[in-house]
Length: 143
Image (cartoon, rainbow, N blue to C red; front, side, top):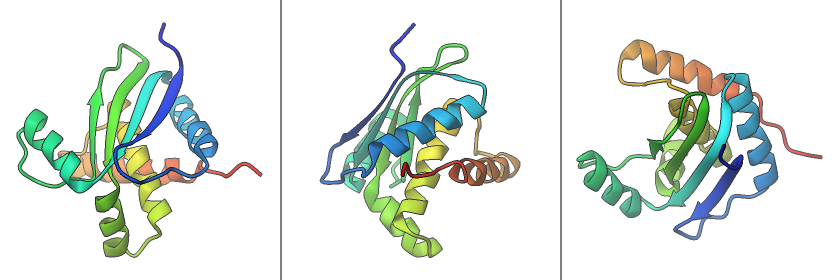
């Protein structure tokens, strides 16, 4: 059994505030999906960094907000989730939401992928969006 850890790394100058609240929230998402936590790494980066990963590993010549590499085994979630904070900033502006709201959406999106949810078809994307909303609602800051 792996260590049950959630790690936050940054390849740019982004710093996740209140990591403890995010850690607790992600654990709650995993539990709500009846999964077990192995090791999950969030890597925050800029557009260029994620673009290179997209091109190299997925052969996609596009910018994206998130790429998740799923190393889960059975019911235990393990993976690396790369998030472009540049894209999150742009998307927040485009959708007229707070950066923190959009960040939570993308972070939960990555976990939901590890849980087995897809987003390729219209029906999958719709279910993914509903799940994201449901998971964002679980977030609360420690007082």
